[in-house]
Image (cartoon, rainbow, N blue to C red):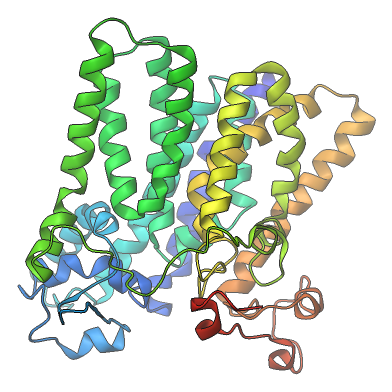
Length: 443
């Protein structure tokens, strides 16, 4: 009982550790933060509320410094390819930063100064910790509170989540939080279908779709279980789907109005020439390559694999729903022309699907903690090592020791647990051919 109590406290300990790391790192001073893709996600807020110039007819120099750019369609209309979901999720933190910058003389209220960078990083960490809380509550429907807490903490420490929580506030960590919220509330909904849960899940679903349209895949899990369990009664089969569809549409509608304003069309494929090669997905490379492999840069995920077996033994329906959702996610994610997703740490596009791996991890840990000490101690030691190794790799990537898109097997092992660039670091890099990848010909 005391051991379980201590495990339950792991989440509170994680909060304290994260706050100490956040405040001591001062990445909002050391890093650009608002740069490249983050600028594209974030631009809606300063463009609308500071510059009143969504079409960028009078762009300020700061946009160029942040690598902001626009796409152009066949009619010559310009627009930004990233959708508005992250901007909406950033917005409470942005408004607090803007108010602070506006009413003090210390910072420029331009959308890019230190308060805004601090706000975006604070938002990422806040959503990450909220997501882990939601994940813990979801897992408690399957395993004990202690194992749920341990699994949540490990899925954070043992993956690329820290980098996107502390350094780069990309869309993924925000979507991760909403996915975990949907899964938690769905478990409540399965036991007692209510309109309250429909509203929470539908709005969350709308915002994760608005953040990254491919995130719609996570809805396979609840939809499959609704089809199998049939938890609805009578008119609920009509009212609940209708309300959900309406709320999802309302959540994504700001993007439709943006496209209409920018191009005259309600629907726009904003990625223009970028697309999917569904008949030639790079799943093996996405999982195991040294460039970006999900398991290579989050080796703790290997511990999840036996958990799917234990999950299937105890909860066949949930296991099948989770594995089908994950399999579909892998297919779609690694069918993208740039399967390594540009400059990024590990398979960042799969962060939204980590809750399914956390579910399997919980069952691996549940089995393991029930074993004899001679098996338990070396296994827990291995898990601890993998988590620490992952944390170290997060640190290496922050320092560009792990390259953002050109890592090789040779460089990976030469840099193993080395916190500085080895001699001739650049000699071991293998840059991808982006032009060939657009045509589906990159090796």
